[in-house]
Image (cartoon, rainbow, N blue to C red; front, side):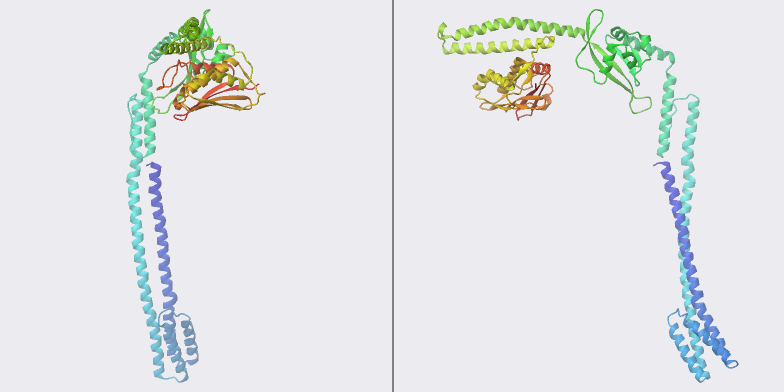
Length: 571
């Protein structure tokens, strides 16, 4: 609990009790005053009136007129001051006996009047006694509650008197001692307070300060310079370019590799902002442009009359300062990884694939032609077993031809030598041409291909006809391959404001959503499926469509079929 809360509760409770004590004292004093006033105003007055009437009755013989008048006056006052039970009846009896006495005075009637007056005085004396008892009880209650509340106030004040100074003084004393220890360079000193949150926060802040002082004390300047030199040497010997920026984009570090590829001088740029350097340096300007969103494609930089390739990566630097818990951003590092050796190997691989594919295409085509000649009856009849063998050779030859075609397309894509011939094409013609290429394959599984065109005959797209047909053919071939026997495939063409969407939907087992991002990667095939392809078709399709400024994608879920689509711009 916070010290402030403790003080508020203790002093606040004491204040409330004192207020309650004052209110209770005032209430009981007013009640005693009221009881006393009732005795004085009611009972005492009645006794006084009765005494005056007795005196007046004694003087009736000597000065009758004045005494009678005095008796009547006090009697009227008594009639207005009837407060006790039976006092009204006694007063009425007094009036009756006094009137009878005035008509015919005698000792017997006078005696009755005196008895009535004594009765009135007796009633009021008893009233005084009763009200006095009530006042005594009120006084006793007041004494009890005032003493009780006073005792509680005393106990609270007593607790505060002994605990509060110790609660405040003891942590201050400990803190004072610890500060003296720190002043004597004993930086291992720590304080641990128990109790209020304020002192816990104070202890934590003090311990953080002591920890930082201990860290600074234990690290000498020469050691820091040596560590800095060691790190600089390590960074300078890296084959990757490294540029360090602080939180305000000032350049505080750059290694030799980065200076080499940027043609910069270290003394001229250290301490400047990267924006100032970018004004006169194209490469730094390009790096700065891609700093928040580094590009995936490698950056080609000509250095030493040689093409070098680098991958850009931006690494934010966050540290936890000594004694603190939260990370703080202090800058970032621009890292250019040198991937030139890998790029050269990739070029060699691509050239090798292109050469092999090109060399294989001719003999494979010759094999297919020989198979077609064997199937021609002019060269003789084949028995059933021979026909099956020829059919298998033909299918394998076609598969090899398709693979070599995909590899050639891939090599063109990777080398950037792909040629796109953009022209105005009819969406219907693209779809119909692709369907003709897969009709026989679909008939083998008794699969029907249904088309739905939501475009006009006059609607044209800007596309490379052959490559777009190739993509549509790839979509349809995959749909036939993954569809079940006797199912149907839906081909739909929709028109949007600035584009046309081509989609091919099958009723196969579908593709798990976790593979949607990888489905268009080279050589990727969905795990668990019958692998009889290269995994290049969709990757090549993606490249063909994007080269035509289009968009490609897939919508699929397990056991719900798949829908592959691409969009091309309207003319």
